[in-house]
Image 1 (tube, helix red, strand yellow):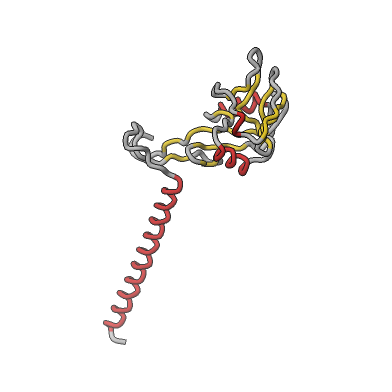
Image 2 (cartoon, rainbow, N blue to C red):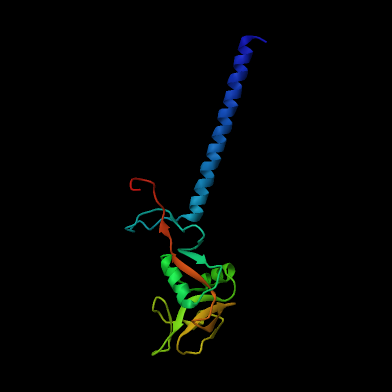
Length: 184
């Protein structure tokens, strides 16, 4: 085999390797772009926070503009509330049908809500101090009384003693993704 054939063969092999490498790099870049579109959102241009990616911590579920953490064990309502607080979040407050469907799809029946009825008012209030809007739920079984807490079961709210044990869900807003520049 003449010497130039070996050189041409080596150059051809190197060209193929470079081409394969470029295809792999482009595929990874395209995958990252699609993943970023799926997970990240741009803030409005008038936002003080600026555009960026917002993510949930590990083991949290992302839905719309919130992150949700679903417990795997059971505790009282107060212990559940304290656990959420320790995670920098709060017990679940359901505001719309979309959120309700997401919660029912991703949790077992019977999880604590951030909903209580305590004296003297005996009104059902969320942990954010807003009053319960009963029209969102299929049924509401909540006799007002002292020290009662809300549990969601099959799109219905049920009353439980706050000292009973149940699984719970914590919620919080997504955190801005670190840009990797500067401060560490």
